[in-house]
Image 1 (spheres, rainbow, N blue to C red):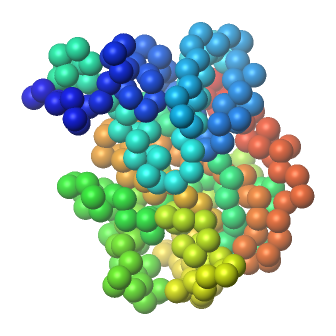
Image 2 (cartoon, rainbow, N blue to C red):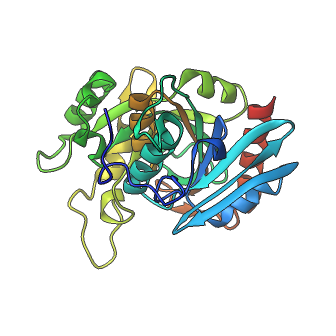
Amino acid sequence: MKFPETELILTHEHRVYHLNLKNEDIADDVLLVGDQNRVAEISKYFDKIDFKTAHREFITHTGFFNGRRISVVSTGIGTDNIDIVLNELDAAINIDPVKRELNPSRRSLNIYRLGTSGALQESIPVNGLVASSHGIGLDGLLNFYADWKTINEGNISDAFIQHTSWPENLPYPYCVSAADKLLDKFKNTGTYMGITATAPGFYGPQGRELRLKAAMPALNNLLNTFSYNTLQIINFEMETSALYGLGKLLGHNCLTVCVIIANRMRREFSKDYSKSVEILIEQCLNKIAG
């Protein structure tokens, strides 16, 4: 099957359009960050940087940390950007850009999202670290892909719909698990683990109200009180469900680890979370290269 120009959009150098990347630019271990400036904050730890590129909000540095080749890519904010990043990372490594055909053998990436988020459990401290065992998507993105039901944790979704009396006019809340082999690296490290809720926006979709009133003013309390077996929803952000869903459908291993910069239940915000971000970066690099 040949992918037409309208579906696989490439530069004149045969790089995927938005990310400006091709196969050899991308390491097997990829760190995703929302903030463009955080790419350099991570690559400063590298022993050597052998590739850099930037296009729009997507910046990539690839280099070596303790002998391990790692790529860092900025995504910007939201599941819509994750849709671009995951599809184009996969296209760059698994589609021949000249023949426009699938490669005979496929690469699988280990993809870590290092981010910031708000805690939904009072017990999780500001500046603490959380790893997402699952992402529950309030955003609807995965519903646009044909095979989403094959990876959906339907029992969790059904329990969530019942607990929240989820409105029919909102997208189906799909749920996808992290890659166990990546999640295991953060067990017994003092990192909190549980379900991450992914919203399609920062204000109303996360229960915030400024001049506009939220349609679900009790949303955060409903998330706070939800449980499935021993799992609770521990934080709110804007990328994980799409990362886990697209990653699993495409055959990549994905994990999100976040610094808590606010506790939404206590209405507490971090005065300075930069040190916690540095701890997260160092911990993740050492676990990849260890």
